[in-house]
Image 1 (tube, helix red, strand yellow):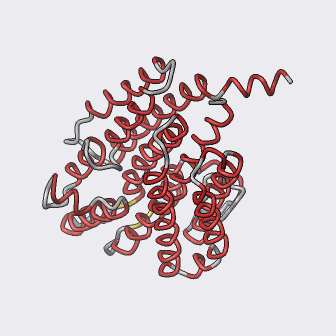
Image 2 (cartoon, one colour):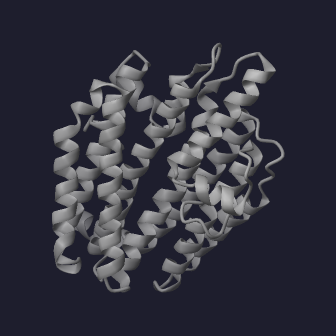
Length: 317
């Protein structure tokens, strides 16, 4: 397969996953806001840092509040990580490689883009309409993955899409876990306990993980158990460890994968070594930053091995 085609497929997978998980990220923050007790507050500046967009937002707008951040995350096409920009970029990547994709896939991705574009304004009308729009985006994105899973051969093209999807999913799972670091808890210990439980329940719901967590981890929502589950459970498809296993599986069928595989196993060792008995927000935030850095190194290794050939060729021309 041409390296240009492989890169387009990889980024199509990443951008579609980014759009869905940014919607989940916003839903998690919104639900936390609704459940905050008296005397608790939400640090919007921290939320931007968790998303890795604080510098880009600061260059665009001096005010850090919900009314400014939500359009930036949902529809601002000057932000390449916004939902609308991610879907548009996935659509463009899919358009250029339509010959290797199931025929209906382009129609689904184009339909997702049109839905996001036409409903972006409605997402500004309040938390209720915003939730409906974001749920619509998540559902349409899930139907695209269902189509890919059910009608695409497990060839190199499929592995490139799956590789991008799982790298992005692992990264975004760490960011959704980290949303809680933006909450400033009340001083009352009783309120803090209630707020903490509600926060982590929101995290599980944002990742559609609440029922599976209760089945396989703990009937009680405890911070340490939730973090341990979302990072280390090998069976739930949105945990970091499961995503790393999927990435290893993709790399194993691609040629010359040794360097990228070493980076994956380094990330794997860091996740497995994590101790959930100390999950203070500052400690957890620093740890998740390290995991995100490991995932960035996996991406760099993949890009260098499989995508830079056509970039070098374009430069030479």
